[in-house]
Image 1 (cartoon, rainbow, N blue to C red):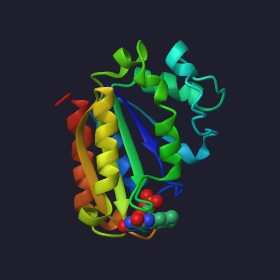
Image 2 (image 1 turned 135 degrees about the vertical axis):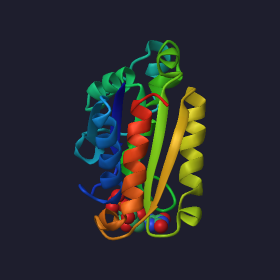
Image 3 (image 1 turned 180 degrees about the horizontal axis):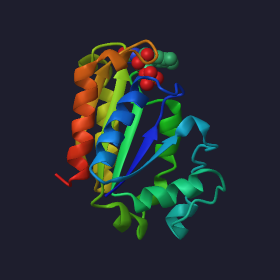
Length: 184
Ligand SMILES: Cc1cc2nc3c(=O)[nH]c(=O)nc-3n(C[C@H](O)[C@H](O)[C@H](O)COP(=O)(O)O)c2cc1C
């Protein structure tokens, strides 16, 4: 089972990143091949809405999305980890989501349909208040691509790294990683 983690926070070892690491280490312990990207470190430009990908299946832009497309296509599970910014995802994650437009068109659509996804969020406010729009957006987007969301870990935390004191959240993330690695 190949799992790709997209860490959308600019904070390395921030809350969403720590939860992502716990999930990925659980998955790795059960034999999954895991790969993680810090989206903030990638040079990814916004979608230019040229619709070239609709005609050719490929994005014309030559930036760090190129290798990421290949990694996304080869992974069976995508894990999105993001802080909640203004009730939505981080800009870093939104850029990458917009650039997934080539996946909406055949033949790419056939390659992504059937994959699975997990959403991890960190927010200062209670998840019930902070995440509905973000969850809705990811759910609709994944549904559009034919990708099932396996679970959502919606964590409440504010200061950088404070979630490392939240043992139950960490344990839940590790267990989820173990579970998805076993294909359950
Ligand atoms: C630009 C910005 C916008 C934010 N917007 C929200 C918000 O809408 N709701 C919320 O609960 N927290 C908001 N926060 C707080 C972060 O979600 C919170 O600090 C979270 O733990 C960050 O996750 P990270 O450590 O993974 O980066 C915001 C923080 C920043 C910097």
